[in-house]
Image 1: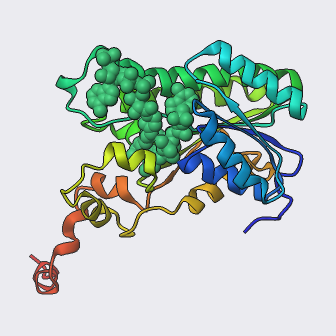
Image 2: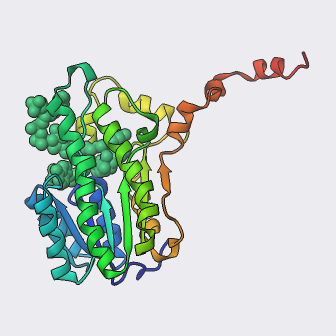
Image 3: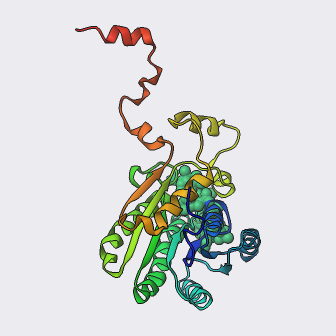
Length: 278
Ligand code: HXC
Ligand code: NAP
């Protein structure tokens, strides 16, 4: 799908890069020649992932960093510049989430998600953005979700935080364009990852089957599909895409939005009847 040297000489920071979608993006960017910095709270996990990715020949720097802590973020960005000379791309992928009836949440439960998702994204964007402004530009890619604009029950902290990241994406796309920085987002639908599934899929209720049924394409996303979309959006060939959110969900959110979408179930005999002039 891509030139094997597409991301050669690009340095990409991926938060939450040791697991799930962050790891898949790191693997794909590495295959295409990028230098990688993968970062999260668990150094052991990062080191294991780095070892795996290095087999493709990529240079990978694992850095322990809690995105909630501005001092740790600044240090991570300095380490990146020391190792690779500059930062070309930041992927804000780290997140926290759980399902809960909202009336059962504590203030701390709301705060922890907003701290990771919204404040964490801001902390990384600020430190990396300052560096990109000095060096003449770059690309910021935020991983959000479709309920950033629809909202969703039972994940209110995450919905509020992701909506904030969406607003940040569109705001900076305009404000930082003058510095040569493009800012975009990806809104994934359901992609099975250990981190998301163990926190969001209630076991024993057949929820996976129900989710698949409501997706027009009748399947979950494959991690490689998301990694390829991210590759496209960070590459120089998409230099005029700025402030955009690309949805990758098999049509899931639109299926819930269109008033007549459930007419899939109408039998042909009824369509025949409905087609008569009345
Ligand atoms: C209610 C909860 C809770 C739960 C924690 N809390 N889990 N409240 N239901 N299931 C509350 C605690 O009571 C506490 O509140 C506060 O949150 C902080 O909890 P800690 O356990 O101390 O937090 P911490 O150790 O920092 O862990 C953060 C975490 C954890 C978010 C709770 O799950 C985590 O580390 N997640 C990282 C990875 C992750 O979530 N991946 C999934 C991303 S998937 P008090 O009041 O006692 O202080 C995703 C998909 C979106 O985003 C779309 C899907 C389609
Ligand atoms: P995941 O594997 O749990 O990824 C979350 C990552 O964030 C982990 O690597 C975690 O690593 C890191 N992280 C959490 N808190 C952090 C903190 N305070 N500082 C630094 N790193 C932190 O889940 P995923 O499914 O791949 O999710 C990746 C992204 O996709 C998230 O933004 C999520 O909202 C989004 N998304 C996923 C889906 C889906 O269906 N999977 C759908 C829509 C959107 P540590 O625990 O080591 O810190």
